[in-house]
Image (tube, rainbow, N blue to C red; front, side, top):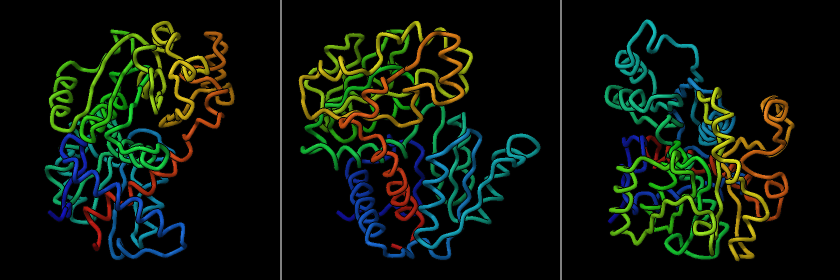
Length: 331
């Protein structure tokens, strides 16, 4: 049955079927081939998009802007509006929906992006909230399809670290939807929400996905095709470095962990930015205050042939382009 996503929001991948996600991944691959062939797109020609940012960003902002321009659209970057200050989110949504053909939001509360979607009257896309990061997961699934020589429903993905953040949640959802064998290794204090685990396990009975949450690193990484990690301290939690380091210091992805997989073809993934050296202000500060020169991943692994983090980063643009084209474009 043909897939039609016109007018749809992307707030969480829980709202999409496996067939719809597959459609977006196939469309992203087509758009990537078109860009690499140097073909100027026109699928967003005449479309105006606004991208709203409460949180700082490199990949999400640049991916949205470049994707819009590639397909002939126009973009407004909005970071200093009255939304939530002098004007309600509902009223802001109603105004922006009169001006724009699509709205991206990157910020803190999931409730904010859901309110925008409820009242804007145009597609709304979640560029990241504290709960979910669906555009990242589409890029990740696209990257796994490109880099692992087996179908998604045969892939074993081990997520290491803070499993109750937006990436832990969203990778588990994406894996459950697409049939992956998903293992999260984390201290019990950082396990994902129990209700969400149950939802994903229930989804897995339909897709063949296995969902495992454990503190045992060896169990999680055995035979893994992908080892994935994220920062130990998310945006808005910068006062918790000492606590997170104490909890997660044994969960660093390093060569020893890579070797534990027993898979010579294992790949390393990270949504970025990554604290793998001291070449950032935060990295230097962590070293001075806590004595760590590397955090969630060693520099050796980050720069190794197994690392596909920059392929991931590129695919943010192609997959985001697919979302906008499918929901608001001229297909």
